[in-house]
Length: 338
Image (cartoon, rainbow, N blue to C red; front, side, top):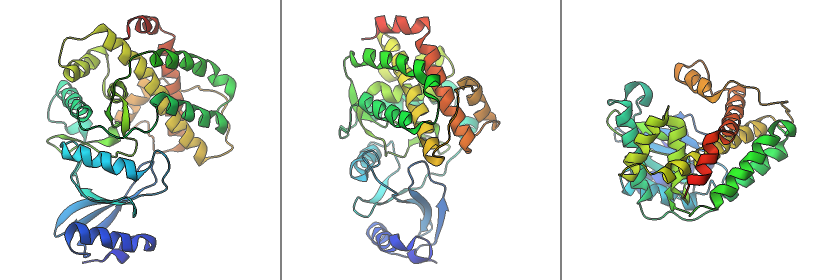
């Protein structure tokens, strides 16, 4: 048996004790193991109480986006509609949350059904999320994108001339999307593969730091960019989500948001890389295409666990967006989107 002071940082010991007492009526643990956290800076632990595994999370630095006073509520809402693991305890003041632990299986290698089954389940999960009680508002999504781009430019990570056309075209894209009718829903906003868990029977959505009220196509575009390989698979996603025949205007809107999503993840990876190595300057965006990097990720020939890997992935996302915005499909999407 162990006690919190044996497993957790001294600064968090009393907060962890309060959490354990409130959730389980005891401060005694069978075990506590530190797990690798994500990009948020939170510390995550697998704990056992009474022989049962749970996940305990200690928040790191908070800011406008990483604000538990907002996303703890979003997480609870998602858990209540059966999309996220059950929340056993969440205290904004202490920055401590305890959730049911999901024993993860490989979604890519061990999913029990076909790719169509997986895409159908993803779409059904997002549809359920988008009909859940409304998440709080935070920022206009495109305004948030401008802030990320401003942060990137200020970092000086890549020579401005190398990205000038990318951002000029993005400005055109954002102006086009702003003219469309908003469709705000309870949105996760970061449904990358690390935030979708498979337990051998079903999918779970986790890590709600970025969640707030946003356009429905934000989540749909994220799923399409990470999980679909072609137009046919995107069509499965959209048909399942909307529950009807594909609409050309919806497909066009999806195409536009997919390019915004490419730029979003480019900024996330490149801003993170710039913060890791301040002062580093890169001359260009010369990297393999995104499809090649995704194939490398699936075979472990390419990794996001290195600084260079994260930089290359961010650069490939920017290049993917530019290539698609310059394609004939972009002009067609601008005409058709509604």
